[in-house]
Image 1 (cartoon, helix red, strand yellow):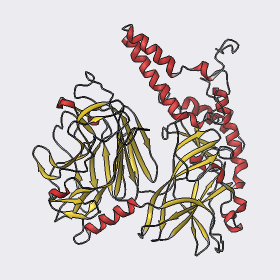
Image 2: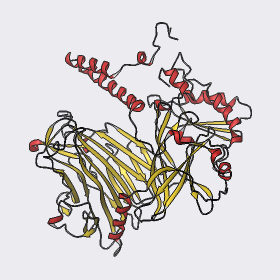
Image 3: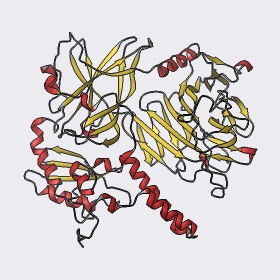
Image 4: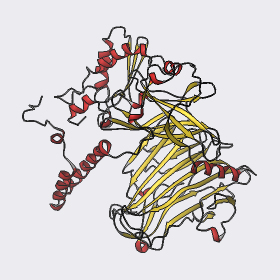
Length: 603
């Protein structure tokens, strides 16, 4: 039944309810003792906040600005022909300042792009390396994630492998703006299995298994030698045992611990999957062992794992923030437990970045910037390199705001902790500190699973630390002078070339005739709603990759069948295949200008 718009919901504000409205209703329901209604309103409030986060949350400063893109015609003619089909380019200059060789080092570049001329950053962005000696451009694999639209600009993360000589530079070019572009498929050693945050992540060097319950790292399996498997056994503390036991805190007076590993399900999470990296972020308040009897909202914890396809380490970034003034007994931000006694010796790193084997001397007990273990026969090794560990005062607070808080960099590495196994545990604050609202504790660690060669193991870990502490510098720049441009091959694959666009445009135009009829009074076609992720043409055969707006509507053929029927009517089309994906999840950022107008949003 069509709604009479003269008396209906014509604006975005009329079609939804905002946070203040829902908070008012929730408080009224709670005060009236209507807890079922209050719970429903709390869920609805979270949905509103998730929507606002997708549409409005701030973003980081891009390395490539939206206004910095140049027309392909400004390139030397051989390179412009090589990049045929694309509209814009920018030069990315990478510099190596630490005197270390960089081979296929992961670079995460934040890029802004103009909405005009770029329909889908995930489809249209490409990266190429300039071989200055040969004068040729060569495509490198790239992964696009975190796609958001803010005003008239897209902002995305672009990950690609970079190779730069010691004290040298690398010149890379980013390209965008090709309506015929297809989602690229690159060969990769990264395999991600599972759904949500409960994933098995396989790289060239190891397999990481995350808890299906709460996303914590449960097991690591090395792909070197005999396949060492690191695990934690037993009953834990009633929760599933993990090798990564952080983060948690002990309440003031020692009454109870609040743990991430007590989550029955992860309350909030973001997941990025792709050919070069997999990122799993989880955030929320830790739970009591008798949750929900005690549900304090005092220490907000945000933890991110980042796994790369080709390197032997993974990263963990975390932030623990006091959101109100409170006192705790102690807190831990890095604790690992290994059952099975896989190691024979302790490793640790001093504040100068030197690796040592054996017990930690008392004078270094609070000055440790790396910790781990190795086996003197098998040479298997697991080591944590501490890249950052700092205390951040509340925003706008004076220098005395954290004067009474001491930050400890110590661990308690042991080869035999009764009832647990081999472990280290960093209690970074202790002795009942009073935390002011807004104070935060930030860490970044790199964890290496591999070998510890006799004679060179320490030097290899030390060199890795230097590389990680001194990443390649990134800047937008100009093409180098004195390079003779030559063409070798082409950037566009069949289907992405300028001559392919008229036929492919016919398909895209036809898709705009397929509507999501659950939105009755507007043109909510599948293209302008952002449901279409990819269109491929192979002769007379069409492949369409689509999504649905949320998992409450899993029967994608409700739209897939109309898509198939419409495209089969096009001249020259023999077959149509429509597939569905939930990765990446649909967001309002995917709406085109027409889609935004239909939904009542500003363009």
